[in-house]
Image (cartoon, rainbow, N blue to C red):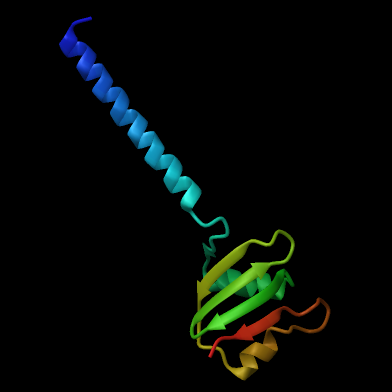
Length: 103
């Protein structure tokens, strides 16, 4: 192998190694519990099915957690009213979700 080919090979290996190192750092610095963005209709369906364990409402943003697998979701919907919050409690057949409203 010539000296020029050796330098090119070394440069390519260094670039690939650097890219891999950046990828590894990026993956490990990501938060583990990121929320899945879902449509508001999915939130309503999960709520009616009794799957929602906790809801945090901040204006028109709803952060909620599914009980069976603890997945976290985020959706955007209408501004919460007292009537809407009471409706989240359901008919009593399933345990109601904990509802928190941010000021």
